[in-house]
Length: 305
Image (cartoon, rainbow, N blue to C red):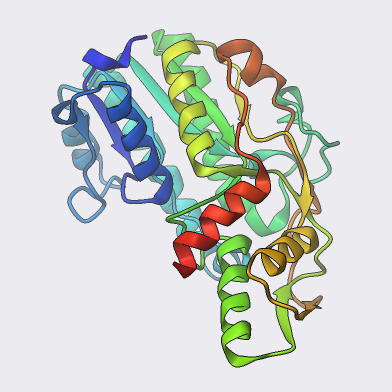
């Protein structure tokens, strides 16, 4: 699919992934007038009538919008996380189907995988068990969009695809969004105060597959252009790095000589989350290109100037 002449709806456009994806659409030659990016204040997508308005005249939907944040947020707001994410996706896909949208790109999450999935996670393992408890409401809400996409393809011939996105990082991410901006903030505060240590949630042992936001946006657009099958596809770097190693890299790059102290009373979440990325490369030629330390440098530059 050539996106240059398509009218495209991007939900979640105010987020750091949304902003990156819109930049890449413009770089691909999509006219700005063909990109529709209403914020949640303008169109609350939990309401059916707003979803119907959002897809009027639209040919491609890229559904990035989601209610998520760090582990603390997931512990405090499980009901809202489940309801808001499920309702937005279900209502939007139904509205898109009724409106004759040509393609629907649903952005899921690596948290959809069962808690004990062998790493690196392969797409065929997606139904082998229950997701990790901390992210369960979010993961199930997102996973239902995979079920909806496959059901709509089977019954209606609706071209919906589902991408399993790993943990992202990069310029523009909110400080509360994930471990990387949080650790950068604490390192900066410690350096300013002359503190001898910084505290990190959990044991530091969990391993994550971090994907730079620009790479994530590129992978999503390649899938929008080239992938038209019912099976979900992982989007990740395919490389794992522990939270402890991540914090050590941040300390090195911020030139902070301080001790790392881990608060083991706080939850770790899933202990290992690394994706097998072979399907994405085979099906639509995506491979992450940003080295982890280079991505961290750019993220530090954004947060600290």
